[in-house]
Image (tube, rainbow, N blue to C red; front, side, top):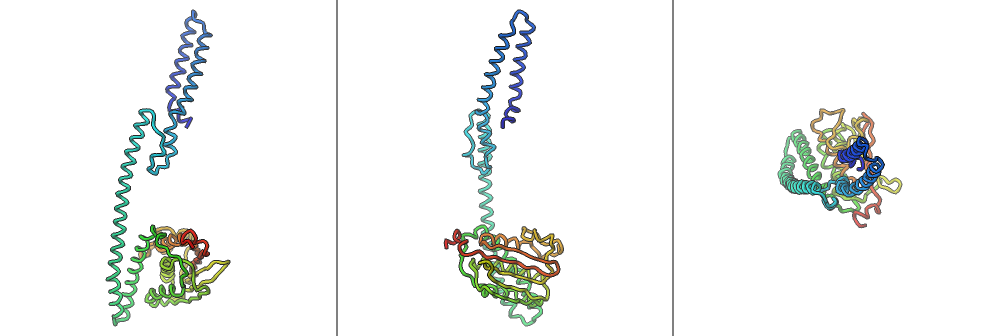
Length: 334
């Protein structure tokens, strides 16, 4: 700030020293005038000028220092009170721009909330004909056609489910209900949903539950498992998917292992990024790159740690490590 102040005032400082030099030059030219009194005057004026400069520095930079420390959060109370007319002009301009930004932000927020509510309402409306369509498909006699339609119905169902949970994530912590969740019931419900797809691909499930339940929110955990199982089925072919739970170092762990194509090592650090699909199968138009991204986002408030281990061509293992009960105190008041 000191450097900036001197740069800003360099023309005034330069003018002062030019005047001092000019006075000495005139005294030098006029031999009738003694030089020593002029040196004394210049010394005193320079001293006064330096004191004045220091005083003005602290007075004039207070407003600009507050601008530099302003966090740009549209809160104007942290800005120092302007004193000079130019500072007041700057403050007025900032106030006007801030009010305009606040108004636009408020309008945009209302529009986003309206769009979110409309989308949620649309998803709920679509679920009704989708359920009716599933019942109609189940009554079809042609098994091949029924299997194909069921698979396409399942894709629509999963995409709508993704959208629904994505819109609910910002308010997820208001909807959490932490309880002992039965893993067997939850897993078999999700497996049953994917049954037709698994039969079509010749995929089975091997479930080994050494730990029967975990402390979490059942609804959000179901979504996490749904995404992991969907990925496992999608990238597997005629091989069983292994699901097992166990306890290690006082924490409960759930593993989902497939023996499919695996994940390229260079892709592993990016699989949880929004919109990332794959560099090895980039032509896969069905992939949205949202499943694992949403899984990571949902796992964070649930205090679930997700690890992934994969070998290209050998398969992938997703490991969910659940928190111990006292880690939920700040969420559930347990």
